Image (tube, rainbow, N blue to C red; front, top):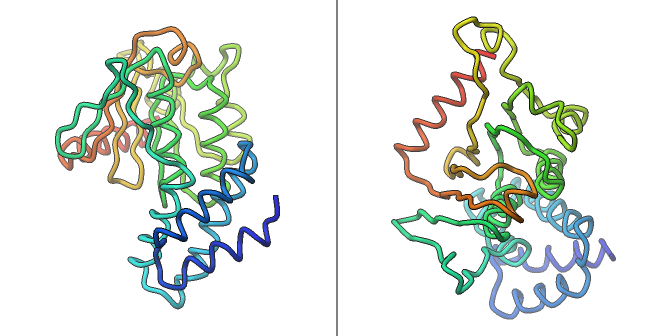
Length: 243
C-alpha cells in the first residue's frame, strides 16, 4: 500500500471538509483496489484519524467530524440488510441484528471502526479474533477503551483478554474489589453490552465469539436512545468502580 498516495488523496478531499460525489467514487475505487487486508484497512483508518487530528488546528471540529463520517462510510460502510429475515427493525435510530450469520459481528466491527473517542465494553467473553483486532486497532488510534469481563472466562481456551491487557487496555475482572470476593456475589459477570462515544449502545444476547456468529441464535440491538444509554453507562461505571 502506498501510504503517501493515500495521505495525498485524503487531504485533497478535506479541502472543502466533505467528500463530493466524485471524490467519494475516486476514494472508493482506490480503497477497493488497495485495502484488501485487515492490516491495510487499519492503516487507512489510522491515516484518516491522523489527518483529522492535524486539521483541528485550522478547521472547526464539526466540519472535521463531518468529513471523517463521510470517509468512514467508504472505509466501514453499514452492512446492507440481507433478505433472510435479518432485516433491521427500525425505531428512530435503533436497529436489531440476528445470528447465525455475520450481521451482529459486522455491526460490532462498524461501531469500533467509527468510534471517535471512547469505547466502554462490558462483555462475558471475547474469543473472536476479528473483534479483538478491531478493539486493538481502536486502542492504537487513540480511542479510550475500557473492558469489564468475567474472571473465569479469561482462562478459557481462545480467550483474547490477556492479549488486550498486554496491549495496555484497562481491563477489570469481577473477582476484584467487592466482586467475586463478596460472599453475596457468586454468579458470573454475564453482561454483553458496549457504549461507543457515549452516544451508541450495543446490547443483546450475542457473546463476542465465533460460535455466536457461526452457530448460535443470538441478537444485538444497536441504538442511541438517551434513557437506555444513561442506564447502561451508570451500570458500567458502577461495576468499573466496584471491581
